[in-house]
Image (cartoon, rainbow, N blue to C red; front, side):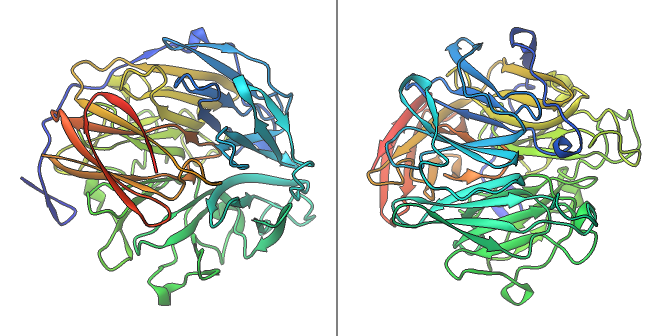
Length: 490
């Protein structure tokens, strides 16, 4: 047994060093391009749009058109028809109309677009037909949650491009799109501090909360990371136990690392990457530096200037039952205060709860200006693969070829009503080694997200119990054997 974050947990045996095969050359060349408006963004959406359980990929293009790739299996991807959309910064998949087919919210430097998904990966622009209010703004963050049959959308905007005194101290306000009888109503979410990531999820108090990560490079002073209480319709303050933190917020990753049912939160930034540990009293504490997640400098020693973190994502790369952490790294452009050639990070978690760098050995420590990414099982073999969007450099694809990995489960949820994907549920998987949980969310990351089964590495376990806390408060339990993908329906 070990002591981790103040909890006593059962240790999992260490497994093999992670290995990835670079398949980038098999993709058509795609580059996230553009000037100042595309220094940020560059997200990627991953979702299954034809029902074959093989997720497709949609990559933002900036001033280039978006690239949509159909998954043919075996890590083979082919370009497929898709509406021509330029000036995109990212995309998130979600079922907005409750027909059990995933739609797409497209983030843009300009008016955002909503595409309704159809059979066999067809898409229709329904922004106007669905009366979704849109303005010519700079969207860089997105999340959604359900309080009824249709989702509430939170839209994060960066710098107000119409402000003649900008860009410094010219952060735009954010927007809530609240569902009405036949449309959505736009409501400003003020103050805005140049949002680059948003995540609606249950916080350390176990309450639905909207977390906003902001870039202090442009709010300069007076701003901070924000936490909005969804039920109370207000921002939390230090009096609520929400301590103000200011950083160059780029991305959000959330995962229960301790098995206590409370999610820890990773916030990427320029310099320190901040991991916040959920506390029993519902507050958060900064992780100790010794945990190994701050990843302040390029890990290969090639540059003594600080790193710049963008998309972050937890996932069990070797299926040992411990969540690992990928961080996409890359200079904003030619910012001289920060490392120019900044390798991506792969921080593997050890049984004692510390994280250790393995990106170079794994073969994914490229030094392009990485932005969005997805750590997801693309070939249904139970191992998490990787796709990375780069600014002014081609898209990258990596297959997880790690040998001797542990067992795993993938859990997908369905329920009747408008919230077909059970956004807001928590899935807890328990084996003899302990429990681990994940929330079903839309949002987080940097400018892109996934709608795929939740992946759990389980180490040596061959059986597991799955508990689902559904959004309506009901609970179900299912016994399962490992190494399979399950769809559970309420």
